[in-house]
Length: 178
Image 1 (cartoon, rainbow, N blue to C red):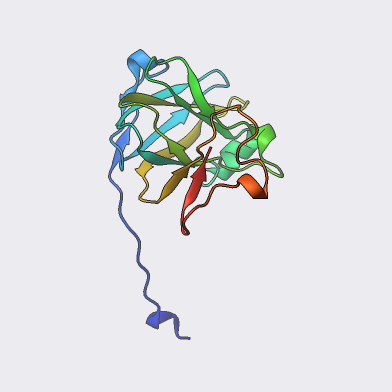
Image 2: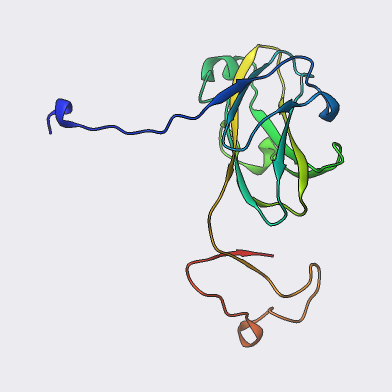
């Protein structure tokens, strides 16, 4: 095909820049859902917090672009961005990604789907896994529109839904949570 006949389409997302200090939940920068936050991590100890509001039952996705933005800088410090969703108390990590969980190679880690447990203000915490170079990043919280089926069996319970005979019926398409 002729390259001039190719049509490209993409969506433009509004952005907001970090403001220092933002290294605690109390000093977090506001990040409206659907808006990309951009910042930089200057030292191995640098942590940036962002706050966002969500409603109980919302399904969110967190996209992180660090190594994809400035691969050489992240590589020179042998580092990747580590992201965590922090509860409304500003300290309890509800979910985080660690380099050890994802192999092989150094790359951005994302949270593909997370169910918000209660309405409130939540936090994203981003930090480098190591290194001292100035590393840029962008992150984005999106609300997902998808069907979610929650497992009927209580967390840590056994006995129900553990074999074919007691399997729960789900309607396709859906995502199962439990």
